[in-house]
Length: 173
Picture 1 (spheres, rainbow, N blue to C red):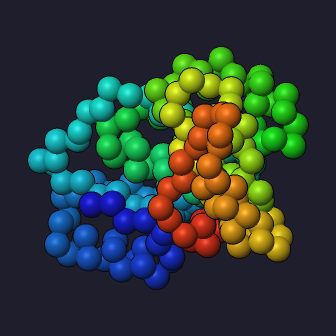
Picture 2: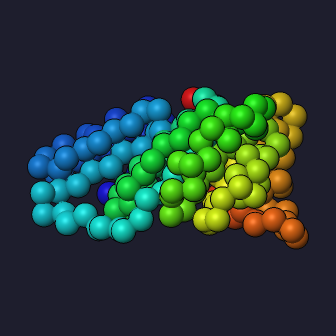
């Protein structure tokens, strides 16, 4: 079982119910990512022959990237976290370029104007999934600018794809 975007009360309720109904379950609880994964001993985890890079522009993207990491690992993917490579200093992205290019797929979390997935997509030859994060101020603070920037068609560059999720759900922790 995977539960995401849990607040403290929901987390306690899930723990209590699991203790009652599945005391043998192993529980992995990530408060920062607001996720909880519970498995029973008979669970046979899937195996996926893929390495997915989960990229963040900065610390405000950590919770959303953590949630993506939990889901990807539950799907059986190997996850490589590449953190703090925001476009405010392009050299940080360029420094990580060899690692970015080694991945099978990239999930790129970005707030404010959501530029990082598009920048990364123009530098690599692998699929890039944009993950809009609510950070910044104005439209950026609600995640609207990041979301809009990620769904715009890109004519001469590789396009990034946004997750079909409300960016308002990914508020910095």
